[in-house]
View 1 (cartoon, rainbow, N blue to C red):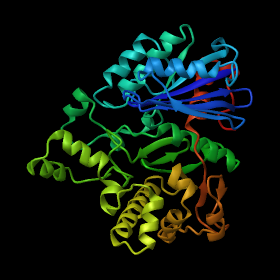
View 2 (view 1 turned 90 degrees about the horizontal axis):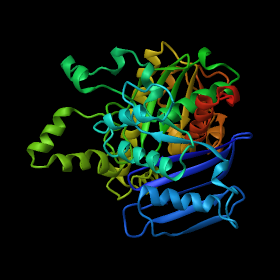
View 3 (view 1 turned 180 degrees about the vertical axis):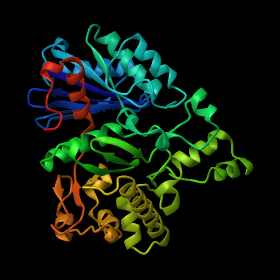
Length: 407
């Protein structure tokens, strides 16, 4: 069985083709700079072959057509025909409260995605465009939507409601939704399997730390709280997003003469590590290098990042009434031993003890970095959102053939 996973963004289209019998990636890549006059395509095969170059097509339909052409190319493709693709899985940002599980795309599902345009104005229209491109280029092939919000839909009202007049929730859906759900779901299952336990037996604090950052408190396999909110702006300090902020600061920015669009850019694109460090980069590696070279602003940015992560871990530990494991994933979570060291060093009050040598050597691979006497097991678990989407497609369309999503 072959599943194509598509992540259609506002200016890019990423793809991964899986053979699900052994969950092997056959090919992957992306078309970037969509909408520009110089769209670029990157194509990689599992055997190491890589091809990159400009293409003429700059629309979602055109990008998908080029992807399909490359997949069946007689010389460099991995398929003889597109008929070998059994289904397509789509990463979709927002399903609101109406979609709480992966769903086969039909007219009703597409209407719900449209209804969520105001909640995900940059992502949902692009996600829908990717779905409709697939319907046009590969008619009859089933499409399944896997939503960033769905894993968080188990939160209780006291977690997802904001203390605003209730009518704003009832009429306009203003509430916490949470994002990165596919990643949090994957590492929840993978960590349970790695520890030889069932998800229903564990309380986990999962930390997805990258350019975008979020955390989740997972009780017995279900989310009870998460750090991102109505949008991905709430919560942790991120690469370019501010995270938690006094709402009055937004009003003050408006009073200073900034337009709504400018404030949106400030909060989402100019803040976080980028805005505080002032070195022209939001990459944690660059922040740490500048800090170690004596840059005080970079040091401040890194300290703010660590403090917010530690704060959420403490809060989620309390909400869970104790946790079995703390899980790091994402680009920073998997690869920055320096960041993990500073987070864990601040958590001695929770009984966390870690092995510095194991922490330093566990980069981009799964492993336990806590010591045997640590009250919490600390795990590094690489995420794989594309594989989680592919597994969800199989489980949704072919439950009798479904791969064990916890293996």
